[in-house]
Picture 1 (spheres, rainbow, N blue to C red):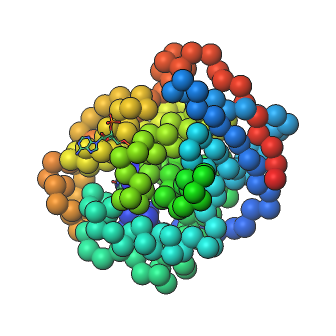
Picture 2 (cartoon, protein in one colour):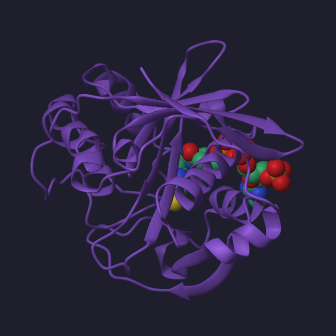
Length: 246
Ligand SMILES: CC(C)(COP(=O)(O)OP(=O)(O)OC[C@H]1O[C@@H](n2cnc3c(N)ncnc32)[C@H](O)[C@@H]1OP(=O)(O)O)[C@@H](O)C(=O)NCCC(=O)NCCS
C-alpha cells in the first residue's frame, strides 16, 4: 500500500516500461446484503491473466489509461491525500506521464492478474482515485498487498471499503491469492479502519527507515493480513461469478 520502493510513493521508477495489453475482460460485481457478489461466465484460465473491469454497487474499477495523467497529477498534488505517504512536493506531470503511469499500467503484464485500477463513480463517471492489489518482491508467493488512494472529495462515503472488498474478493477467487496484506502508517486511522472493515486482522507494528520521513513516522507502520481460509470462513459459500470479454 505504501511501499518505499515504488514510484507511487517515491516518484522513482525502478522497473521497466509498460506493455500494452490486447484483451480486456469485464467482471461485474454486485453488492448484496453487504457482500460482494461477482458473476462470471466463459472465463478460461488464460483469460484470467488480462486486465479486467470490476463493478461494485457504486464503483467501476477499470485499468488505468494514458488519459489518467491529469487525474493522477491532481490526486498526488493534494497534501492531505499524501499526508501519510510522502513528504515534499508530489511528482511532476512529466514524471507521471513518463514514469509513474507506465509503471502502474505495466504491472498487470509483469504480474498477471494484479495491478492498479482507476476508480470511478459509476453513475457520475468521476475519477475518484485508484486501488491496487499486487505482489511485492519480498512477499511470499500467493501474498498480495492491497492499497488505495482516493481524492479528498470522495472520502467518508465508504468507497475505499467497497472497492477494497471487491479486490479482496477477486484476489481470493480469481487470481490465486492466498493472503492479502495491508500496511499503513500507525497514525493513518482512516486507512486502518478500512482494512479492519474488510476483515483484515492486525499483525504487527514495525519501523523502517525513510529517506524523507513524514510527520508521525516515529510511531511506525502497522501490518494487517487476511488469509483465503479466514476470508472464506467469514464469507460463507463462494459467490457466483461471471466475466466476459469486451
Ligand atoms: C484512506 C482512504 C482511502 C479512506 O477512504 P474512504 O473512502 O474515506 O474510506 P471509507 O469511507 O470506506 O472508510 C473510512 C472509515 O474510517 C473512519 N474514519 C474517518 N476518519 C477517521 C479518523 N480520523 N479516525 C478513525 N476513523 C476514521 C470512517 O468513519 C470510516 O469508518 P466507518 O465506516 O466505520 O465509520 C482515504 O482517506 C485516502 O485516500 N487517504 C489518502 C491516501 C491514503 O492514506 N491511502 C492509504 C495509504 S496506506
